[in-house]
Length: 246
Image (cartoon, rainbow, N blue to C red; front, side, top):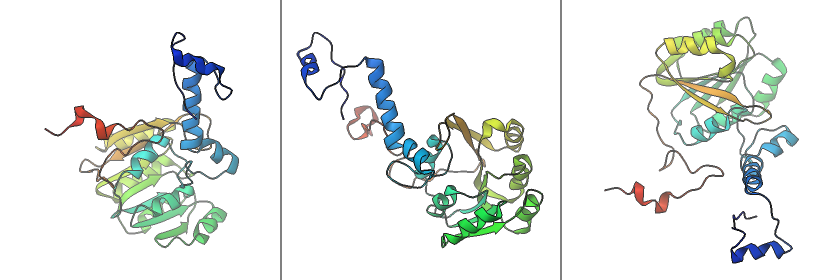
């Protein structure tokens, strides 16, 4: 499917007489293009219909901001030990990108479902709303990344995460726009807040997922380029003279 803006006086405007052409206002063409990217590139419609968070090409993703997901996919996190507070489709996503995943899950049945996936570098443990922070500390380990997405007090989880975060790592706070006190506490701990507000799978509204980076965090690209070419983007890097090395 192609979109083309053609002035009425142009000879190309005669395409309106073709049976496979549809004439719509420019704003309508823009809207249709955006919806095509959201539904087919980012997989939004398929996710709603299937209940499985995935991009249009089938890659499993967390139920988090699309902008954050694209950023994370461009990072090399292969040496990271990651603690996930609240598992889901995110567990498979992380397992494909980091060295190890430890998931603390408050829902017993969901924990069994995650454990049954048999992901080789994932350990799923059950916890509860009341004891999740104690269980975090009881692990007796420090982590390169802590994902705060639990069905529990995210303020308490994030506060405890500060005590087990390795130098150069990050804390991820999902739905950060709903937790301003938690975000403020992490900033006060000298972490660098980077917000990724966007649409996300299985939700009809926009929401923010935020990274809180240790001051010594250094982004390591997984590929030659960072950011990677965007889903639904316009990639002109190969012929961009204004980016030429001189």
